[in-house]
Image (cartoon, rainbow, N blue to C red):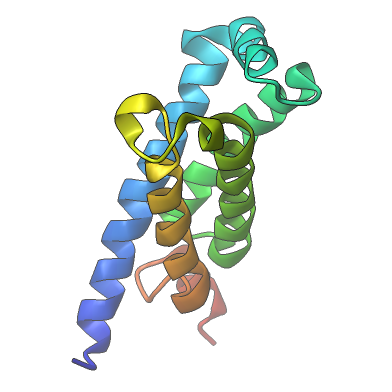
Length: 135
């Protein structure tokens, strides 16, 4: 099926859902659990520079998720978020096995795949990227 309207709608739904996941995670890191606890959690998982990593991950998740939802700088943002998810998968989830119930790599793999789709196909027509590039 080569229907641009369907593709663009699917990309919009994917961007909104994936972006909302990252906004929620970034919000939780900043305002719910707080950066101090997030840093301690990352230190316990063996993440290098846990304090810096907590602030970096929380900020990228919150801001990047917001930009993904509105479709601004979409390909760049999805690439950065994909790198963040891959790093989290390696440092935190890989040693836990595959399934999400045990904290494994299943969830980060799905997020990375969703972000890969956004990187490959772009933001679609229902985005600020498209609105700002129309001449």
